[in-house]
Image (cartoon, rainbow, N blue to C red; front, side, top):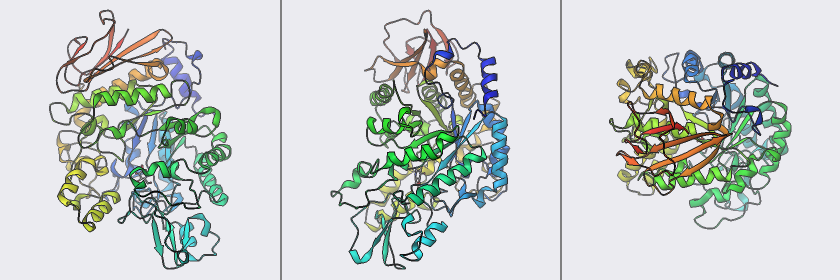
Length: 569
Ligand code: NOJ
């Protein structure tokens, strides 16, 4: 199925001037050339005034999304859900969450995107469902119910089950006792997110069917939420004490996970033209390759966390940043494909974590990070609002938080007598709610996000950081983002070209080249709030400057604070 043949034709006409022989690129795929824009629907745009973003809101902003130049949208879950974890707890996989609208709204959203040459990737949340899903209602009703084996149960007459850590539970305990059948059910996330039993072939078939339901509607891909945890060793071995500090080693890539993915490929992916991405990439390069090497017929690209996890509350080391991204690049240089990102809905804001959100440097440091994302090998994923340079809100009062993980961790800290002030100070920096405050459209009330009462506070800096203001400023973060997107789309070397790190030990500047078919680009990024220089073997005298986030002439190897420069050599 080549739904988008006409885009390919237009692209060829527009960029017939690709300075490289596009035909010669091995393994060329639309999803490698994609630029993904992630939309968190709850916080993007509210059309009906209930304070919660919705599908009609997104529809009203499709021209804006198109104006960014992105060509894929990844939508966080929009299925029916009681919203314990903002949609990551699905109660009906074939229906739309009431807060977000109707299936008719979804259909118009999809066709509106396709009309604009934008593809849609859906979140697929099938490591777990909601406890309000009909499968779970049935499953818990009796030990002999046909749906019993859709979930993991441990009968209480066998004593307490071996400890499993839960990421979102107030007691960190992943087994929840249910007196109805005198048994415990497993939930790696919250109590309202029971884990599905992937070892049950009937459950697997149900999931493939629902995936086909969406693929038949014409969606263009799936992001597999937490799927690395889906397969379990159901002999439930004891894990060593303290395993939860490194739980991914025990939870990720277990049992027959690859077998299930291969089956999913046979049943679903092989029948459609879909882009598929795994959230999490296991614990090693080998794990990541096993997920995405094309000869294995599992998924298309890995979404690994080592890079995004680098920035802690105390900051990060630029040398380490370079080392991690270079290591991942070299591990995927010849097979497999990666995602490149510095933020998503599970992180605080990109500029606050990796850049500098003080008024003096917010814009330039956002732009520098954007330049990084748009010039690396791998498919760029860009989180909504980062194109404006939106910043962390940093709540200090627990009543401002909405995230189940923040609220339950706070309760855990309270019950265990932890220092709550220290807990809240840290949460203010690390909380996922930092990345979930409403999109800042203009300077009207609530940043133009809603006419009602927003479900979570709007960042008060919306009066200066907003789309309308940036739209009319040619030197805004937003307009720089558009330029960087355009640059990537014009040069296949930035997608497929080899990557080489320069001036490796420079503690301030990240310098690298990208090269394909004799086309060579050099990218210089100053990660500091002071001038810094880099040491290059070749000079820049004959290089052509294609992009820079400062006005006025670039100064070659001496970079201004957070300066980003892209040269063609
Ligand atoms: C990963 C998602 O990105 C996150 O938001 C969610 O809370 C967990 N998976 C559980 O679904």
